[in-house]
Length: 157
Length: 117
Length: 335
Image (tube, rainbow over all chains, first blue to last red; front, side, top):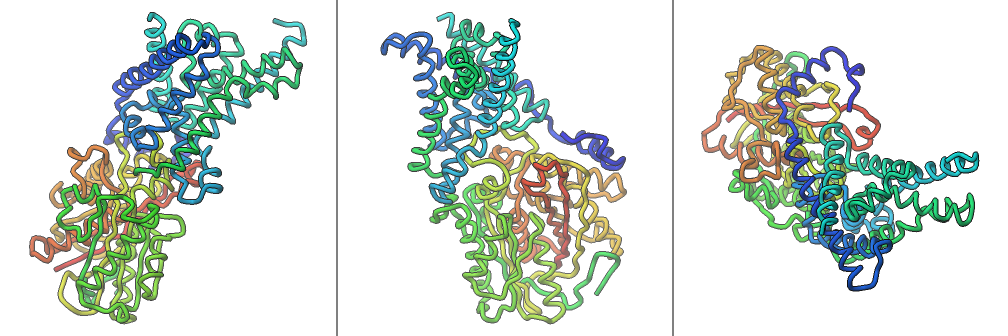
């Protein structure tokens, strides 16, 4: 978002002029779609989890790993077949927020850049979109863990 | 069965939060996902994410926010076992399955598929 | 001859003796599909990357235009072309194949009319006998460079536009039969401080308005001089804004006399994936060199003002939080 104070008067006037003539994003509809699709993916994940618990002797605690792997395989397949982006246009955050979206960012970048070769293209670009999630996830987990450690050390909580 | 419904509702709601961040606050998908991961780690630190996982199951573990929580959980587990260095050892302990499979299957996909356009 | 501050009149009236267009799958299904010379169902067009496919389209459009006019490439003194890919590789690589002396230009989506106005200057100044000029864009290569990987699931807002897959080339000569290039107005950069790359129409509309007004002012003519004024790729959003802004400044145009190539090339009801309409160099190149020149030759249109609009930002400038500088070049074509 642009800060309004960086715009001069004419620019600010134009921004308002243009905004009145732009179609608005259908926020409510998008949210409902995101809820339905995102909820379904999670409910499906829960089903897979039960499947692994009941048939392969996983426990509630470690069934998350095969579940994540299964969802990722499905997502990568749909990405490769060119379907995931079409579903995502409809579902918005519903397909972006679940782990399937994470797999989509990695696999779409990998597939996209194969024309530049496997080392520099696929290897070099795989984390182009997913990188920030890993970087900020790792750093924030590190920071929170250090804070917890300090609190424990100081005899806090 | 009940848990499946809760997974649907909680997972769906987290997605709605993501949708609002993209549509109302005009964040790019990368900014949205990064924010959710950081929020997940912070909620984990406050001890709020695990109860949500117990309650909603996959509704809390499938969304990307769980990634932040798992990174933290792994770090804290090793911290208790190995002391300070455990933070570095443990960060990827629990998320390994997700990251490894995304890399491995993503790479395999690049061997098989071309972008359809 | 100089006219006003930013316009010139071509007294020798260079002639567009032939033109040719190439299009992709969505362009073929669109309302102008019949006016496109070569159509492909496959975005790869038999090549192994989108970038190579784009180069192929430009090559084929150039070859076809020469073939239609019956002019040997050895007689053509200059090839002027532009596209959207980094370092304009589509144009340069097509020029490598064609082998005509080459000037590469970059005006983003305004490249088509930038090329035509430069070409007209060369012919009018009697520097060359024939000039070939064109522009190309490819939806998938543009997505890859400017936005996200093609298979990445990011939701597009309703203001976003669809880069046209295609290429359009025309052959300009000092004499012959065909529509004549009579005047051109070179645009100034207009930056209204907008930053949203998914709303290019709104960013570019003021540039189009600025150039159109400059054209009338410089040439001392009224808007009703032209049968049709087309903008390159404002899309539905930018078109509405430009129309209202022109009206506010006292230039009254209607939806019939003021149109947009990006809205003409697709049927937005049957092809909802294009959202506000087409964009890219090929939006104006394919629509003007294919559809509109054909209408001029058949006598349906006599006087056309073609205004190609361009957004001169890059993914890097966007990430550094710069706003989007925009430009528009106008070329008057008369039968």
